[in-house]
Length: 438
Length: 96
Image (cartoon, rainbow over all chains, first blue to last red; front, side, top):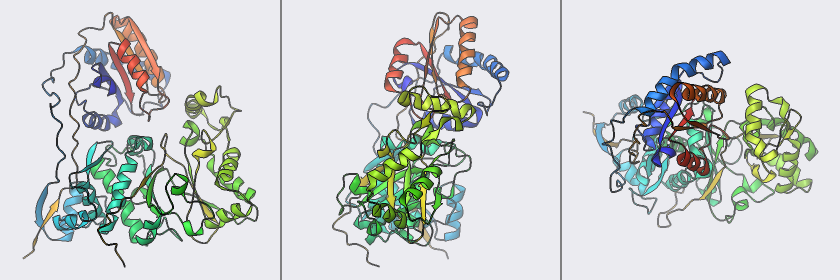
């Protein structure tokens, strides 16, 4: 796409299962007429002889596409930028079941019951931001839909959010669209990449975001609806529909909703947002591209025992973290965090121990995975053979530590999607609006 | 009688303006073709075969090859600039 934008002819060779994504991406990125030549899917499993046959078959298509005159030159870029749009409204019978049937049929919902995004409900939601409804917060990959404040508010209403949650979702939209988060890959990958929302600061308390027992599970309105609203933003603004632009082979339940708060009161250390340069009194949202939640259960008297268990869990050959040098998250139970604290370790020392102890033998990766590992890490580590020890990240500081949960000896490892870096943004609340008091 | 309710359509539009597509090369004889290898399994081998076929069958003068670190990362600006400056057309890969 970037090649065409620089005025040079380009063409994509695409396996058949990804054609829909390819065409939609071209349109979203402003190169709708860039030629695509098809090859069979799956492609990566073909034998050498099959590859020669595929090359023989597709080279004619490539030659033709590169040579032929383009008949679609009339569609030129407009001379002035398009204005931010206002959402369109329409009338329906005020019947919850019928509205839900309609929204599901049109692929406007996530498969669960939605609250109708009525003009009145959205207007009520918008009172909680001083920003204009047509203010553009970001564009959301892969469809590059325009995330105006109004479109964000519509998703918030559908998810069942209370109006005072809107600033959290505006900040979350800013966070997921920050280039370092690499949303394009998270949305379109075959991996089960979910987006986790972590709330820090005083807002976690007064919005009643659960940080204690079962914080990643059900039972709390803020956790459930904030995570769900972000998913609707990724679906309805980002266009990542499963099987279409979202190519996840299975996906995962956290793609419905995945939001919790750090248990700052039970943590012996500075919380995540303070580590990242915010004051303790500020409220923030952090987004993390998580591939899953792996429980790590250990009742231990020594910190080293827990370090060994976590470090062992972090190692697996198919991990994007090891292949590319990742930024994994470890969510420590208060019990484990305080055990480390009693050992006299601060967060930096825990990270250093985990980083050293989790180095994985490169030979555990086989075949194409070993090749990907070598290609992904040789620039950083130099020559790699089967006996090379591979760190999970380029440096210990790339491992994030968060304390969350209630009583119990379970911590959670969150392996992350390839090349993503978690992003933290401040939440700006509208001071003139009174806070909700339950 | 059921009351009526005014609701919003939740799908946000894309405002990206389309770029004009560059014209075709007319012929491949004497041209330089660039490949950006997405580093997916087998793509490197496909580029091997296509390079030979484009050269022998269509008279392509030279093939340029660059490999991305991974499929999910975009090509670097330096890589794109090199391809744009040296190649007459660029071929990329997508999918598995």
